[in-house]
Image (cartoon, rainbow, N blue to C red):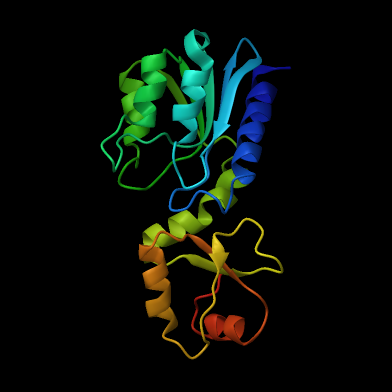
Length: 209
């Protein structure tokens, strides 16, 4: 397997790990991390239910000394700081001796926004971004929507698979206010069944197609 093919396969694996956790990790996005040494996976993890621990802070300790000189594939930019003040994921990777980090999507949140990538590069790690970014986009669309609007994203779904929760309000409610409240509570992706509520959300520009 060539380097390019291996990189794609390992990032695909990280994305699949994160996809399996979608709907369980709010208020944080679901992130996958795969650590590879000499073509072999030595550890892997996804964001834990409830949003913590992050993927990297699980995968790095699991790799142990084998992380030295390894490549980490991460679906979203490792945080450069933590809202809790705890050790950041970029610090975990650098301190473990990982030599290269491949990132699918750069995180625009205040706790990353390029800071994680910069911290890794300052520590001497090689950092590459954008691999399979389109494939990873579904993991973060609700998270990014909440950052931009203060509201969770809402979509029509037949069963709510991969969503944080169902939006259960009256179509006559102040939907913007309700969604802002849910965004403040940490929700990122909500679902509705086809019907009057979905129609009202669509008419107000609050439904993501």
